Image 1 (spheres, helix red, strand yellow):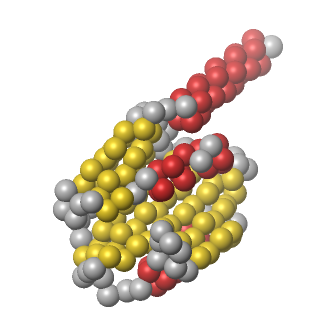
Image 2 (tube, rainbow, N blue to C red):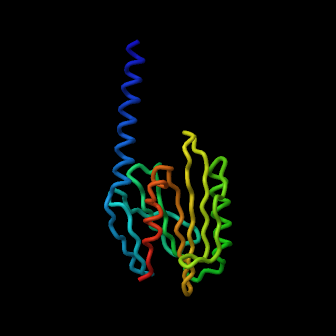
Image 3 (cartoon, rainbow, N blue to C red):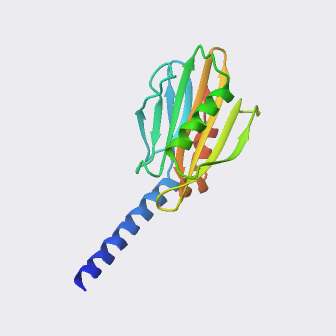
Length: 173
């Protein structure tokens, strides 16, 4: 009986902690990250961190915007100089990577050239917890640079439009 009470208490504490993290993610103010060469800026929630990542195609390590709990969301901004691939070819490669990483991955929206992006996709997968995980990629070719924004987010961050706010804030300087 004592073990059941302890387990119940631990589960309640975990639920409160997760709820606090989710609320703090959705109600945060935004900061601006500015990259020097090539010049671009992007906004991100103040309680997220800015890190560097890896991308074999990128000219330099991509910038990662990471939620307080990395399982909630992350956004990678990579720049490829002297790009020889079309944005839809890069997208196809990213889709394959997501399909290999995630179970039940399906593309929910795929677009060619829009006013803002040269190519984009959004997808969804079921996580081990049975929550939806959203994946996305947005690509823009300017001169001899390809800018790509890719990432993953849980349903709370996706539904609160945090990813949309981050992606739509991207500007070339």
